Image 1 (cartoon, rainbow, N blue to C red):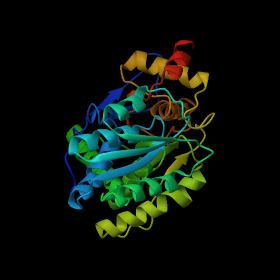
Image 2: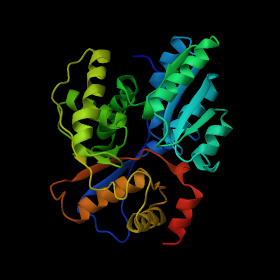
Image 3: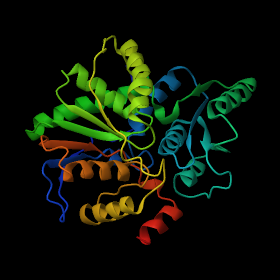
Image 4: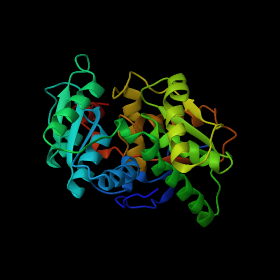
Length: 323
């Protein structure tokens, strides 16, 4: 499948060690937070495929959805601006949300932002409404799913998995475990798919920040895997994945004091920025599993850093500083 070249890849892999934690395994981070400035994070790998399709089909406008502080929405807005395509964002949250962090960057990139209430509107129906309005004016519209998480977008993380295999050879190391955030699960699907094609030797772990492991394994992943099969011509039917849903905490984008304390310690000792919505919770979960001796059999763990530095709101920053 063809794709655009928007991300700075391959992203490097670094080993880390916190000064106050004697980890029972070697921990490495794949720096997908460094895929670019405006594009930073995992979403751009998916968007390389999705925007390639948009250009091939003469799309004038893209529509996607997410939360008000969606990293995916910001990356979509930036990519659309670079490619000269109109971007429409349907964001769920408070209608009086402050223009800050990712939302500010959405607006700076020229996106048409529609903020809808979490209780009042169905985002998919709203996107269809926007689509009809644009088409009535002669536009050619593509709807990109939340997180860019469909079969086409997830090919970006099949590429990432193969990139990891190449880096293992260069580094002379084998990662027995690959860990990532599980949100809309497109990144997870691509890693799971790549692992299955390579023989399934790695433990692919998704740490959920919003959904149950049952929903992810039974409802979210299967249709993405099926779409990837159609696109690649492979037939991946049996695949292995571990979902941890113990670290959702208070809920999506809601932080507990212990999570903020962990983020503070991690960033101050590594210089690697975590965000409170995705990577902070996932890394907190990873360390909890390690330090509670749940992963005693693991030797070399690779965490995919999916970005999120732009996601810090004033409220979250103040919460961190009050820790």
